[in-house]
Image 1 (cartoon, rainbow, N blue to C red):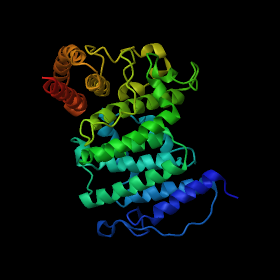
Image 2 (cartoon, rainbow, N blue to C red):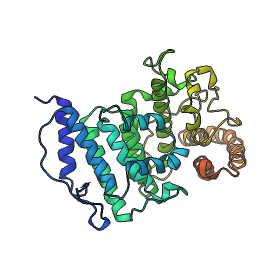
Image 3 (cartoon, rainbow, N blue to C red):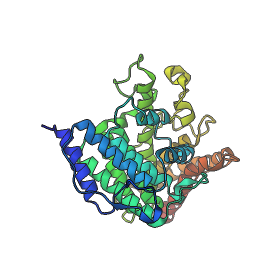
Image 4 (spheres, rainbow, N blue to C red):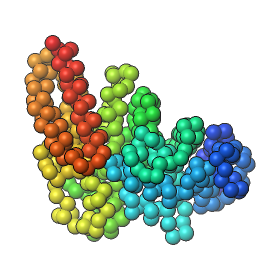
Length: 376
């Protein structure tokens, strides 16, 4: 008799097939005019491994219906979005794709579809060549399929880092396509899943692989990459929840992710987190998030610092007295101007890597001015 996890995966597959906007790869050659055909409604009971494999194959088929292969999608993602949002370990991602005859878990399958969606967005590609040849209507259908599948897996299975990453990419896609309220609601769900998986414990001055007892000093590289991936995923939630908040319709909503203290370690850039030096904790320098003048910070670390500053500005709106608010803003004014100047100098000739940090900092300046006008 199938166990509970088996039954829930079968339920996900049934729901995926029942969605008329979710598509399957047909046995005939790819034809864009015939894209997005309806999935068959029947599914037979099968062992757990087979049902997970079936789910993965359905996702694989969806990607093929966009005229791409998984290799195309992954290359575009890691050459584009990953450069400024390195929440996914490239090494672990490819290991999951070629797991010694095994099948990736359901969360990874959803992540693969979210990567396909995000890497097909013109707003997120940022000069990556070649561009994905997917029209707006197909992207909308792909989004609805990914959103439906994500919701069903989230409701049926335990949260995982891969599923949280998928939800974060979906939220970012919603935001860049002009739906900040939906994005804010989506990232709130990611934050709750992150708390459930305890990846929020990465916010400490210790190296990120020491945030859980799961990773000991003798742990292998994969476990340390796992911990790094969890840490950067949590920082991604922190950064983008505050970014989305600046555009929501109702500003009284609370932020669910708690910003780390100023002594928290800056997240590691993708070029560093994938290297073998990860095995030596002493090889990774400790740079606190409050050290705005450091020269040892890449695009993602700068975005984390920008989000930390934005959080300080947002806290000013919550202070009780007018005097406290003015004093708080005066301390931030010089820090914001100096940090923005540092960013502009650092980004010279380095493409769009620092765009996130610059955009968030400009939002902080705008929010600070807005509070000053309210107090005037």
